Length: 387
Image 1 (cartoon, rainbow, N blue to C red):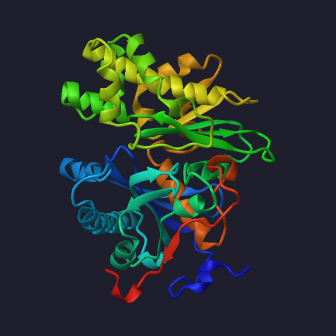
Image 2: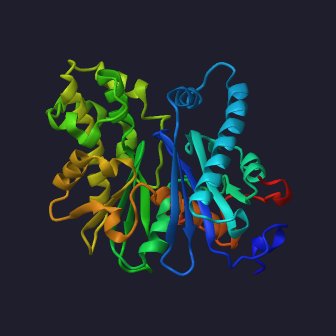
Image 3: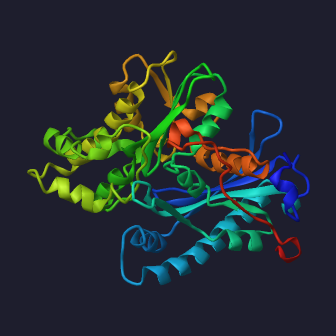
């Protein structure tokens, strides 16, 4: 099979191993960028760079996560603005890696999700951060729009990182948990002939961060320090656990369309208000218990769980996950050579690597797709206009 890379001007050496991964997740806190070298195995992260998303920009992104006035105009403007920021992040991380852009095969850009609706009659998912803009301004071929091809073959379009986890961890058995705004699990059997299972478990940090902002005017609960002082409100926990998504079998994926301020306020208003620190403890318990239930839903030969994403820095959250998983070893992905803050960005660099080489990278056992497919569109660089 002739590789896709050979079909595009400016992509003339598919043996190059340098790829940039760009990631902005449902927490909407930063654009994360990495430079990855995928040859030889295991991959090496040459450089990292993170660009904080300013509060005003975050609010504009959040406003597009639900229907609103003049949203198409606002979407179009923000698509270009974020594309410019992604391009700049790519150039900055390349500079940190001391690599000329000619050495970089491609950028894998996840974009910023503003809608994810896989259960509709015509399912769709939408990530913005225009890849045309990224490719033109960076001078680097860009691969983007990874999720929609999976939807066309009956999949959820998410999660996509489990394929990278399987490739990277080979025959290690255990579970990888990414805790961003939402949380998702990858359940890895030791036997590589067996199917990998992966799905979104529900809220990760999104409700915890919302409550910190509302009750304490803080962006997050550092190390879970506030939640640690509280007690779980069983009425609030039971009320939130009524959410149908939490009881739905995989494949499944979710986002801010379900778990958001309105969702929380609906359940919060149904009970007598607990103390603020008790709400914080309860939201941690919701995340921890749903993650643990997902992990225990499958048999395991190895009881190892590795956590990545922003939630990996919440020690109280990790303790609560471990409390629900007696006999399991719970630690961050650093224990298996994956820096927890950069796993997702590395995954999208790898997804670009797969696409450039004409290889499928969705896992039907994870997304529910009817077949493996090559993900993403390729937007070739215009080298002469690069800066």
